[in-house]
Length: 48
Image (cartoon, rainbow, N blue to C red; front, side):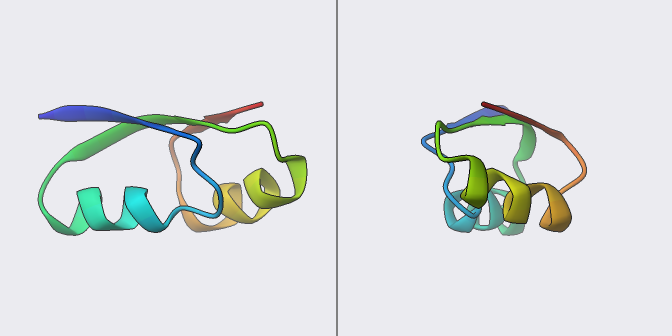
């Protein structure tokens, strides 16, 4: 199953989804500093 992480922050929920077998296809947040960390930890799109 595919998911999108809204209000992604640094990616804790995305990591949980990924560990549970879901495919995270994108993440969205409005905090630029958190998204820069998110992008270092994941390969899918992270949108501001």
